[in-house]
Amino acid sequence: MNTARQARAVVARTLGGPVTVETILVDPPRRNEVTIRLAACGVCHSDLSATNGTIPFPMPVVLGHEGAGTVVEVGEGVTAFRVGDRVISSFVSMCGHCRYCQTGRPQLCDQAAKAGTTLPDGTLRTRDLQGNPLNVFSGCGVMAEYATLHVDNVVHAASDIALDCCALIGCGVMTGVGAVVNTAKLTAGSIAIVFGAGGVGLNAIQGCALAGASMIVAVDRVDSKLEMARLFGATHTVNASGDENLVKTLRKLTGGGADFAFECVGRGEVVAQAYGALRKGGTAVVVGVAGAKDMTSVRTASLTFEEKTLTGSYFGSARPREDFPRLMSLYRSGRLKLDELITHRYTIDEAPQAFEDLHQGRNARGMIVFTVEDLPQRRP
Image 1 (tube, rainbow, N blue to C red):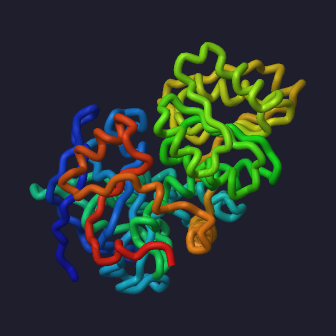
Image 2 (image 1 turned 135 degrees about the horizontal axis):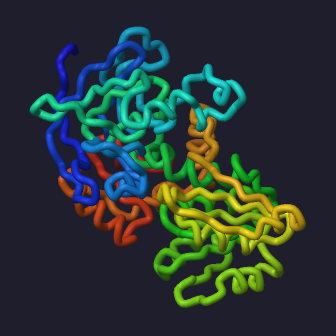
């Protein structure tokens, strides 16, 4: 097909304004690209952050980076994918050649850093009906009925798992579980605290459970989220509302502090609390995305005398082509929860409500559903 496809898409046009649902044009794939018909796309907090400026993106931008669907067209030179293949988007491009890809850290790929709002070659395949170019979120822009992506942003999806569940792996699950098992390398018997029980936080909690943590403390300000945290493996919960010394509370609860703490909120003050709640030799992992001007303060001497570690985790330190299949296998065996993460499904026309619900903290994960034929299939 040599002509552009029309697609309904979720677009952010003004900073701080509501998202809009409009018809756009999606150009066919060029060399090493594929066009995907989306089945589902998660509504992630990072998408919201793009609309409010927490993550700076030039407007207008087609949102969405946590998607799954079916390949409908392949460009020249594509050999790894065929029409009809089920795929998951990966918002981190993986060139395979830069220093980071070569040393097993593709989440830090140099190519990905250059493709924040375009495809890796710096061009776009998305336009509005007037012909004006539309940026795409993290090289994806998959909150649309169709999207053209570079093959480095696409991973095969299992044929026996519903595509809405597959979509979750493309961000929230990979980011949360990966922070635990890839970045922190949490060991069995450890004590862990997870700050924030939203979509990523719940996955960090189930990552701790998968890794064999003996005590998992979930911290949030919303009781309903803490109840959900129990379902995903939290052994203890703490409502931080009104606690004037949360660090003291957590250190007492854990018998002197945690071995690992995961900050899944994206606020400097919470990072400081996560670090403060560690015991000697502990590791605090920053998973949440903070504003560009947000700062964190820690006692510098504690880094030396207590040998504490403060580090970040981007995309769960993912190796998507290895980790995505492993996560799907864990789901298939009943060890990883995916169905339970989706607390509300929306049509694309309901996208503005989906973003409002996300802003109000009403969902673990909202999911926009485009096509339904693949979705009824649940865990094998």
